[in-house]
Image 1: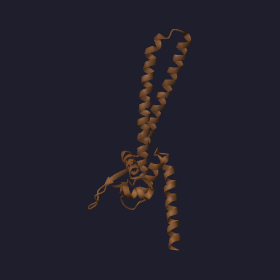
Image 2: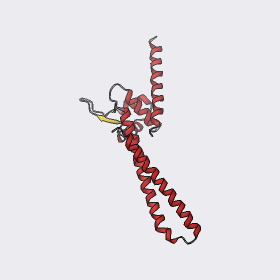
Image 3: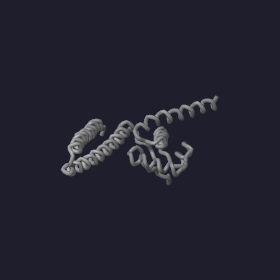
Image 4: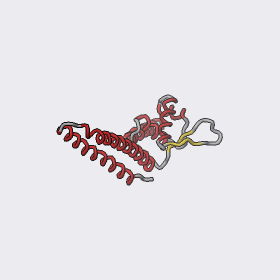
Amino acid sequence: MVLKDHQSLEDIHTKVITEFSKTLEMFGLTPAEARLFVTIYIHPHPMTLDEMSQALGKSKTSMSTGVRSLIDQGLVNRVWKKGVRKDLFQANKSIYKNFMSSYIRKWQTAANEQETNLKKVENQLKNRYREFSSEKQMEDADLLYQRLEQMIGFHENILKTFHKLDPE
């Protein structure tokens, strides 16, 4: 009976990791990062790379790479424990706030970069406008300019929207 209960608990544990990982992948985490985060999150105390490696059946090197990425995204912290010489890691517990903030920062950064790039293209178009000799080229340039304005406005709206959603 104990063996059956243990297997059942392991099956549920695996399902929890699998299902919650799917949600986290929607926030831009790779499948491996998502499984690693959930594993660290549900573990009752901070984990070493060796423990993560054993829990997920992956190399210590891939665990180190994954943890670094999660730390960079503000989802995992390195912690210190007296008497423990190995690095320990734990997931930030306020997952809604951390994931939303991380996701929103990614979108804001991407939207900002794209808006900047589109404005550069817009300036190139403005500077070259006088060089267009045919009526057709000028009409095409005007249409392109209008579309660029809409695209830039699109990115500005993305930035406004994500600014309002930021839980920080």
